[in-house]
Image (cartoon, rainbow, N blue to C red; front, side, top):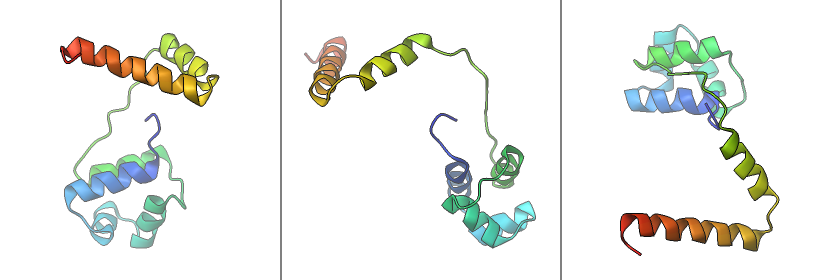
Amino acid sequence: MASMHAAQFVREARLRAGLTQRALASRAGVSQPLVARIESGRVQPSFERVLDLVRACGFDLDVRVVPLDEDAWTLAEQGAQLDPDARLDRLLAGVELAQEAQGDG
C-alpha cells in the first residue's frame, strides 16, 4: 500500500465504478456520511471495511507481503542526507542514464 491511504483506495474504486457515495453506501450497507468521512480521511477504517467498500465497487485489493528491498532503503536514507543541490545532481545523472539507455542521449 506504500503511500496510499484508505481514503484513496475507496475513492478510486468508487470513481472507477462510476458510483456516487450514496450508491456505494447502499451497496456496502453503510451510511453515505460514513463513506464521505472515510474518503475525506476523517475516519480511518479497518482494513476489512476498506476491503468491503472496494469490493462493493466491483474491485478487489491485491495486498502481498514481499521481501524488503534493502538496497532501495539504503539509497533512500542516503538521499535524505543530501543537500538539495546534491539531490538535483543525482536526479539529473539518473535522467541522463535513462536517456542513454533509450538511445536518446
